[in-house]
Image (cartoon, rainbow, N blue to C red; front, side, top):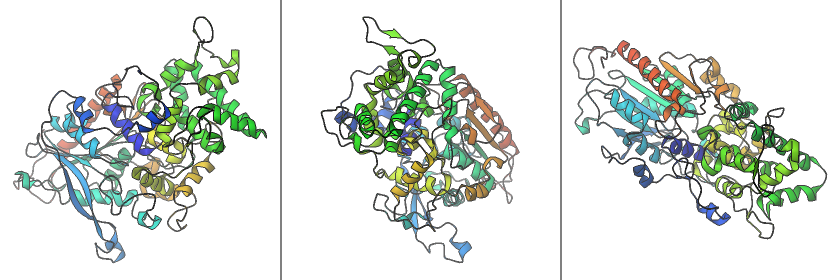
Length: 572
């Protein structure tokens, strides 16, 4: 899905809100038309942030900027630091809780605009990051990744030449954090203590791709980052991430939706059979039945992308997520309302009784299906066979965040490809980040169409950047090089806490070990309200216990301390 949406979903879930911004467990009041659905946005407004808490912001949080070289490694090429120019990287700071000698905490937002995230993480009392910073009387920083939000060396849109993205990679973005930390100061706020990593311990926190970055920073820049928290961090780059759906299937059984998972499996297999047949009329009719007139012009693969929208909310919401989640969808699929009284399917579902075709037709009438597709695939399917819609599922991404992330996963990580073929945009969006292609998990636990293939994911990459030359844009993501650089599963940085959700689709790509949160998905230890699980609080407590020990062992370098007096270990 769309990576931009994935980050939005994660933030909304942490705030106790559904993907549409409504409080979790709020029933839908109406069925949106395809035009209304198109107007819906996942962007969180400042007003919604304030509504999530009745308390006023404790301090004014404003964006700040640091000038950084576009090529952080110019010196190693015998070039001047500014040889390729400079850009301004955005960040936000909260110093309200600071006491001399306490740590600096850096929360990495990753592959999206960080502005809304920054306000929530630093201002809202329900934010785990604010709570963490206050507990340790530290300074809190929210960091925006290069080429996202307002931190890009060049404007990013569909017309940005591929050559402008050559400095968008994980190595450059890590070097940005290192350079920033080594010059950080708040003397303009009256804090006359040395806050650079040689005199003050820095702790980096992140989940998903930012969690990977936290671990990589501790591994590559241990003198800069004293400790790291890598939540749900899929550090192993891979192309074939077809096992993405395995934890989803397992979770559906645990949460009581086994009948629905069996019916979805039967339905996608039946759909694949129609698409495989030589009957073009039947295939076109199937697309129209789901999405309306005009949908028949889409390829089988892009139509399959639309079907994956039912899995979109899993990573951040499990079976919840309002009309985008499995609970609402499965309640619809497993209820036969044709008779005098609605009948709910048993444990085996309807496909074995009524047949897979019945399930497919029931799926096609799910009231929110077309609206969800329109919203996340940025299209205007009508959902009616008598109304022509602008139902084009095979377009380039126009969202700057998705453009930048597409470059990253298509060149380095490959994860997005494997995420789920929701036109890649849906796929990346909801699941967040990691460079893997989420192709179909063919077999007894299949949840998406076989047309969600690796070759389709690859075509999404080259559709977005058709003029990119092979020397800067590989035919397939260069995951072997990526794993050589960052270590993949073999990474072993000290002072790093790892956590994962039991049913997180990305868990297999994270490092083995660490704390596993029962009945949880992606980054569930970052939320204190809404869809919380007991293991999330346990995970936060374990991290704090470990962090306290690491900080007590930390010593300033080069003599002295943050205050300029003789150095001593952190005491809390």
